[in-house]
Length: 162
Image (cartoon, rainbow, N blue to C red; front, side, top):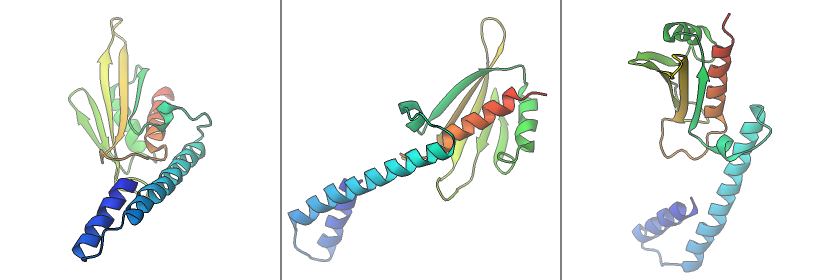
């Protein structure tokens, strides 16, 4: 992050015919990069704690979240549950060949998420649902726990079969 900021400043100085200043480049690279890294790390961990995650692990910090769950719930029933859920009913829910694709919109903390639920069968003919949630913007480094929360919400919907 600091490197990108330094390069953009260098380009700006070049086009404004300003002199090259090594101290300015190093200052921008080190201090701005360090400040932003510490700030984003703090905000990301805070977002995870707000979502009820007390133990911070590498898996929790990852923006691409995956989970598998065994369920008797059909894809059509799951779509109905998702459309009736307050968190998912505003999202774009589409049935795919062997599962569901959910697209969320842009929010203050995110450019949106792409959630995929894929139905598989194991050797015992039990239905396994593979759930993945990842940012739409592939360069996203910090999601404040949003994709983990998406996985947890869908898992709760599947487990709460009435």
